[in-house]
Length: 383
Image (tube, rainbow, N blue to C red):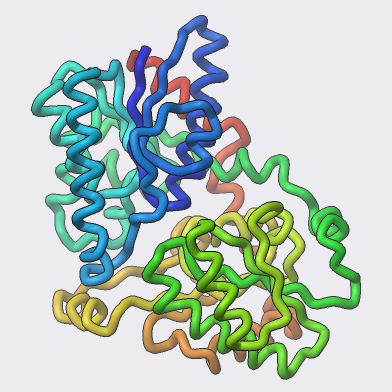
């Protein structure tokens, strides 16, 4: 049985890899032989899937920020559609990545109408989309929608979609994560050292809009706390040179890590991070965090003109729809504000304990371990 899976960006590659492992487990238990063909990244390739293209480095957020990736994305779409036409799959799984996946879903429904389509981890139109047609299109192309957040499931169910709430795949991934003590020992972090994780980028534009202000704040913290050491997990090898250059520019006491990235997160006393899936990883590891995000000034102005707004940016806050972790967005994301919030979390035990307590409440909404196997069973049932 051939399954085609489409996703993009670093987080989609991780979620796709976890799903593929679940699909192989459940297929073996059912005596089904699977051939999985995919668009994704290195993690998905490592599972044994046949990769049509690497899409982990061509994701973006924002209008102007997307322009450099339009041509590469169109080229990937054309190549994938040619493959699908020549090699029709038995089922298609779409993971997040709205622009490309809506295009693939529409193509399948038009050209291969008998092939079922599963949307796993839908784009967050249930949070931010001002355009009802986006929701309508997702429902139209999906034979089954597998939701990872309770709010997501409720939103699509109310609009007539066939929905199953399976839980968040990071629950599975974090089940085997090291404890703080194990991680610090593995990395050689002493008890007297303050370890702060810096997570500036998983998309190319974030190197431009987020990394400078995060590193500027880190330098100010370092001046105040000589015992601090920064740990930077490398999301993509292509970013190494720019991040290393920035570490030198800001004269940071920092270690860039391409392996043991989960240990880096688990070992941290605090994280200063971009908004994204990593926020949920940190929450499940009980690491307090400061979340920031910036877009280009023009993209932000256009969003303001169209009255585009979101209640929250980071997944932990979206789960409970209240402020669990501090978010500094656009004009609020200054190095001074980052330093103030970071130091308060480090030295105000009441603030820190409140974040950790909220994490525990959030965790209850993400489902039990076995998410990827539940998702895989839903998918295989459609075969």
